[in-house]
Length: 306
Image (cartoon, rainbow, N blue to C red; front, top):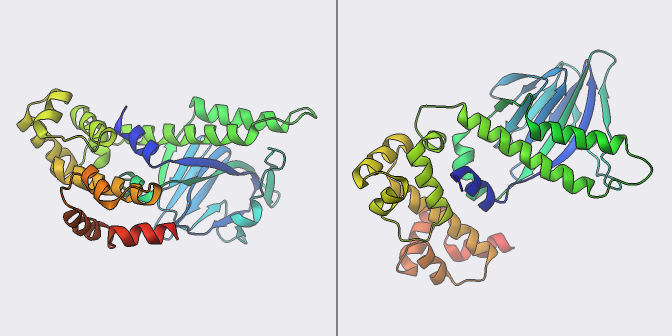
């Protein structure tokens, strides 16, 4: 499995369709900031603009826009128009059906779909930190997007019988759209250093997949090199050049991020989790964990459970 898939799997990325809207000019919708939710918007027909406190982008039919840090933003045709809160437009599905919403005036129409995404953010952090604050990807012709819009159209044109599994279908298709968009963005972002560059590199990408997929294995640079097809020195140099840090600095941080997850999702002892993270003593693990997360493992576990 590749590193992107491993991170998304371990971080338990989940997506859902929260709004299917047709907006007529002039219109403006405000979306509040959130630490718990990430937001994405897909323009199906027409075009609109999106604005955050830092920047602005234009979206056209087929564009997918993702805000990985959950920033507050406006989306619309005219930011001087009265802003309607997204929370007031989004309604829970009834019988699996997500009712279409109309907003704005009487001018040119734009149809857009809003997605909400959740994840274990400390496990998604390598990807979030590597992405810009606004990610825009042209998804024109992408099969997952066509499947999603077809599925939503099926609900609207259904007979009197309910579309069983509609909500689950939308959620799975929304996740496929997000994964496809992220993969397209990463593949279209060559060069540079860091996590995105590592995913695009043939050898570093393989090493990242191994480290993410089998973090508790007693890796050495030589062992990783054999797995990816490079010598020890060649892999060490290439990893540092592409990622901007040595292999074991990255591995240590990833193991600590997984340890943070184990603390809140399992009843394993701190000593057992410390060994999985590669530490021989609970004391050394506790010091490293507190340096990384600002809290001792016991406090992290207690606060997150509460």
